[in-house]
Length: 72
Image (cartoon, rainbow, N blue to C red; front, top):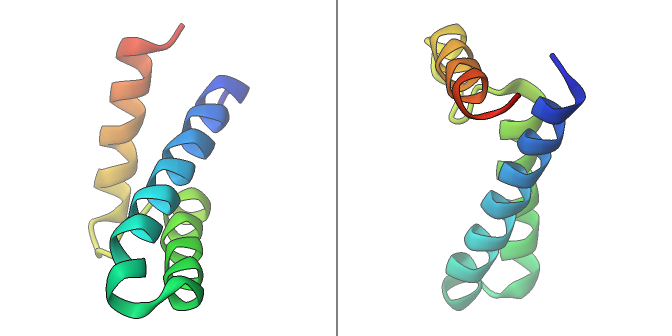
């Protein structure tokens, strides 16, 4: 995995964290929303298996195919 792929993974994790914080803070409050959004971003970034699906390898291959298509 190239450094560019890792950077894009980090940016996607940041988007997940930001949007989920924004959504959850009105429902659960800012402290819990920040905790949940950090958890969601970590799940994506560290496992690249976004929601714990048993088809994680298939998700990773799909994400890598998208990266190969758009990134050098």
